[in-house]
Length: 248
Image (cartoon, rainbow, N blue to C red):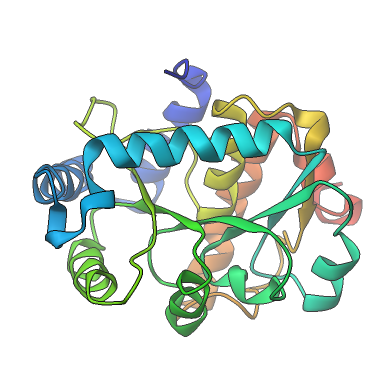
């Protein structure tokens, strides 16, 4: 359906695991468990969470993003005012996890890319109906189990696309590359065929933890942001995504 991402975008995942001492086996077990859980015709009793439905959500998302005049990726340091200023004709928005809270009602929020630490901001965004690009990794298995059980019980469960960060193919899931929710959103867009010139960025920062981030260790988060910048560099969009004085 989509070509595999460039090897450097997948290699960074191994580099991150090595840097933080994280286990590839843990990542793979979480992804496989999610694949198994979502492998039935109506996972959690939700027909539009089936494999075929998830692939259709992905295709529709890709088409909407490719045909937009501009796709704004919203990071955790965004303000509502900055996001509003970025709106315009045929402009759509993709948010990194809780940064969906910075996208005002009325603006087209097409998707939220999330490993599910966005807290109340993520749950509020889900009610608006965007595609949730749900990411499985080694230490969020209990979290995705809880979120899926919760969302399955709402009146309109969100459309889902599932991603992972391992080197092997996992049934019903994709690995577009990247590491943090923000840079993984950009990897997703490029993988879906959105040209670099159509991308815009709000709320990407290296030196601070944004107000839309979930509960996190600030020092560890800043370390993670350096890897975000590395992914953006490999994508060729670092200068567009980050203010000049942050990476000069």
